[in-house]
Image 1 (cartoon, rainbow, N blue to C red):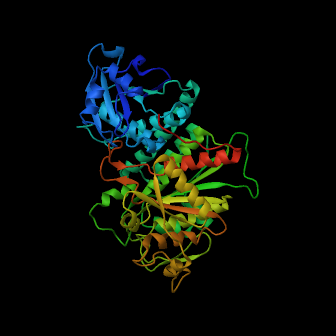
Image 2: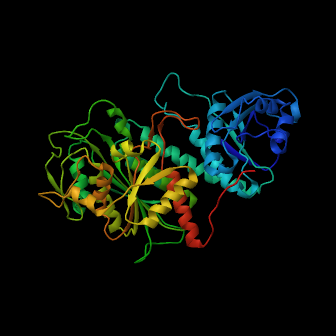
Image 3: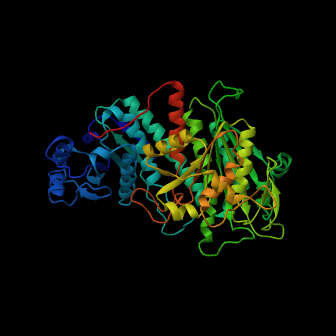
Length: 516
């Protein structure tokens, strides 16, 4: 899709359709909507006065414009309700753009102008959000269909901000393209069937983005994992015929050669279980096909690193993705077995379906070995988080309150919600083992928290936060602005977090957005 920007009026755009944001209870008797109504031959006023559209979030009205009306080249108009004017920020611009792109593609529109109506002072932010939202909105899960496949496409997208700085618009649109495509990269990986997304294939995809965008990559195979003493990760891989891989991607700012002693070094660690049967503690067969998405944490790390390499922040970032299948076989780890992690800590494996925390234990330890001082890990880790928070909030826990607060605020700015759960020391008592140092489950109570407490055992001496995305990484129902299936949750949050950290490092102030 070709992406362009315009600081001129909407009537000048050579597009088939316009999509315009409309605020709750807005009228067409002044300002922009009055101008739009004149171009639409009075149709906008008619729709609003009849209350066919009240401007509530998600409402849409589709109009064919009369020939020659107002000199507008566009012949179709989509009015999209975006809710209260006072609540309208970049996150809402993104959802507006996604809803508009999906709705107009379904009507075979090829060229589209987005009038998001965030004020010109925030032109770059708004352009980024609009482009990112449109790209995310156009993703579909029908990759392997041969019939009833969505073949229509929007070929050219204009982002309109009257009177805005053209260079700010251009930079914002480019950032939105990078972020949107990286979110969809993550979603595409998560959507792949287990046969088409093995640890080896996942490592190949990581190698491709490293080559394309100029990052260092190191892929640890089983032999190297054995040399490192990664017994926790290898205990999960034991039951599969597919060899495990650990992908390590390193982004360094231009001119920087390495990490100095004591220097702040951020690592992102993501669970990459490419298919999870539960191992010997096998899952019920119902909905097991969805366990192809159990590598979404790892896919999130790859998506973030893909974007980081293009956005080029001034801080170094490390991405670590441990990857394996969790399968039952005669070689598989059995409940009651004791394994030794990279740190030397011994683990009694009570339930082989609690495997994500085992591979993260060694991955977090390896990130520490490489010099990471701050670690954010993410994983589709527990079913318990879905019971607690549903598909609205991602669970977040950790040892550094400032880090946790920064992630939560970064998510709020891009429209992704996080809810902090406690991690009191009493929860660690639930994972105390009678025959080993710790065990990998703590019983039915507080399942999400005890899973985090397990990972915490391997995060000594660092600033650490854990994101349990099991409830938010997959959407069972389509939204107006997004297809059903993988959501790409946390990619935008983590990129915003990195940019906020970069701004702090360079003394710049953050950004915001207000409606006009």
